[in-house]
Length: 240
Image 1 (cartoon, rainbow, N blue to C red):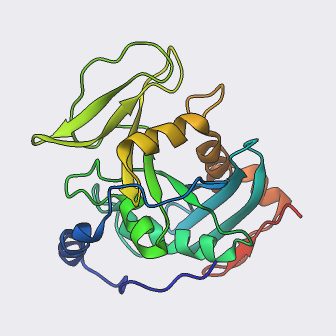
Image 2 (tube, rainbow, N blue to C red; image 1 turned 180 degrees about the vertical axis):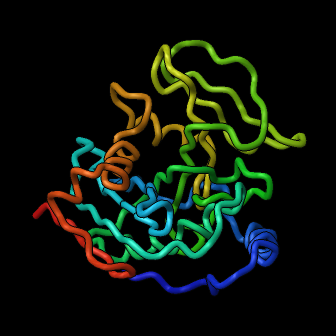
């Protein structure tokens, strides 16, 4: 997968905020995708006390939710941990992983926020804009906003609002579990984003895309199977 650079990553936190405010006007929150056949989960972990960023992408077939392609990339962590600016810390390694894929996904489901963000520009927005792919934020915790109480039924959801604006949804993907926070990132509407998340979710709280990517990003056993190169090199872990 080939990705054209959008901007420089050598930014101060203030410069990163200014860039978010500039780029958010380019985000498209209507459906600009055909039926997705390949859906990718994106997640990031850290190694060596946070000094190495480890990004993972797992590409699944929407028809049977089986992994078709996957990649891991590592690079030195160069941006500090600042809530609201996590994409500047994580996206460079994610882009490395995406370029290693043999298959180009039709849709990205990102572990993190899309428009459910103080400046409406979470990691799903950032990745969607750079890759030009439809992208959805699938967050396990709330960053900003509020919502009404959900019923316990699988698939129930309530709008997530902030400053009078609907920025996403609280979605119950499994009865008896906490909701996930879904928000569009780019080239997709909220309702379609919810539908795809539910389509990718089976018996667990997290969609299968996110579950596979999370394991790749954080499971030490995977390192035992596939030794890590020295950063900032990347590695492809092919299923074929």
